[in-house]
Length: 104
Length: 96
Image 1 (cartoon, rainbow over the protein chains, first blue to last red):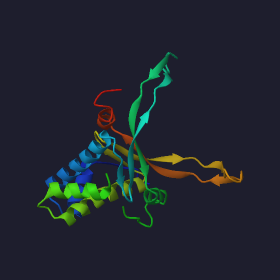
Image 2 (cartoon, one colour; image 1 turned 45 degrees about the horizontal axis):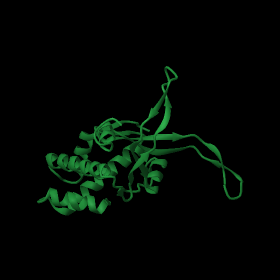
Image 3 (spheres, rainbow over the protein chains, first blue to last red; image 1 turned 90 degrees about the vertical axis):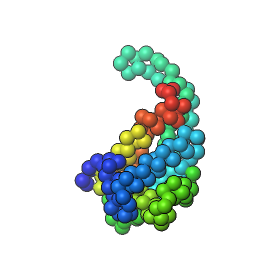
Image 4 (cartoon, chains in turn red, purple; image 1 turned 45 degrees about the vertical axis):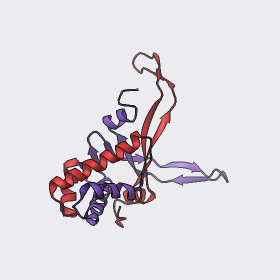
């Protein structure tokens, strides 16, 4: 397990190289892909990326939290949170360490 | 929004780049993330969020129907933590 961190720039490079795009185009594509995903989630829509996973927005009710330092009870306001549910294919791919190469 | 819809929108915006290349590019993005996670790595997309792998310890589970105990092996599961901007944006742009 290499355990290295890849960033946006690495993804842009990979797209440019593997999909034969100019780097600037690859960058624009990745930027828009993330923006479109974010916009859908902000609108409360689910984003279903087959073979990869689903992003959902869930509404959380108000609940009582506690300041861990002071022990004081503080209300946690209702909020919306984004959750990601990996596809079965992605789960298995990660579990097997990439063997079998279930392509996304 | 489905993957096909995302791809179609990107194809429209990326013209005159060929539709097939745009679709291939989306495949590459998701494949690179999957491969990084399979290798035990992380993917950090500033503002959007970070993908990582979380370890789940082995545990003794129970078949809820039969009550039989079953061993559940330790496993590694993909995990996504939304970034600050995404977290704020789904809450109308402010800290809730």
